[in-house]
Image 1 (spheres, helix red, strand yellow):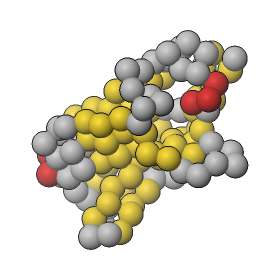
Image 2 (cartoon, rainbow, N blue to C red):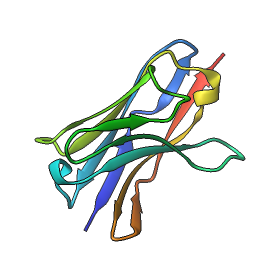
Image 3 (cartoon, rainbow, N blue to C red):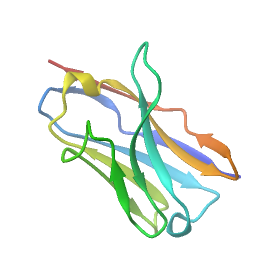
Image 4 (tube, helix red, strand yellow):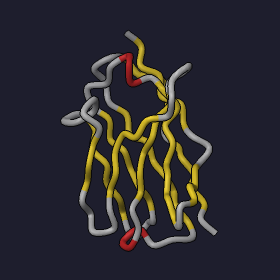
Length: 115
């Protein structure tokens, strides 16, 4: 059974940095794609970053150059390093895995960027 648990959110000033973490169980990261999504109040959930099983990464244009997705296969953990944070990055950040058209989600972690 796939389980995802996010942590590491918090309050940060604009221009600051934060790293959120997703502890993964039930799958091997080296053979599976993982994603970070975010959802701001009143907005749809949006894809932020992807890391494939082979390690290829992709980013939304809005975070390219500021966010970095990575993973530690030994710890079965996925990270999202967020630098140069902006108030518009404020959202709940969710870890995601998709298998056979089924989406698995964590509970999310709140990131708030103060201006």
